[in-house]
Image (cartoon, rainbow, N blue to C red; front, side, top):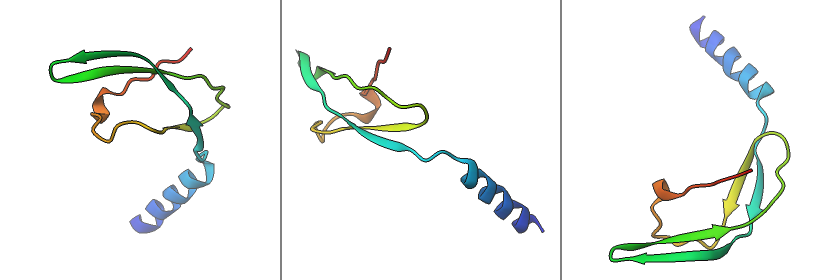
Length: 75
């Protein structure tokens, strides 16, 4: 019985979940600060986002970037 309830719950959640839309954000480097151990790179870009869930894809980033250091600011 419990398995049926869990299956039904996941089915309902998936039925009403909005799929993510993916958009590629084109950005350019606007400012760089170099430190003894690393650097801070500021990139800027603009885009209009539709209502709902959107996954932003930012290409051309260094493969050595610390994922925890990424920050996004929006208006």
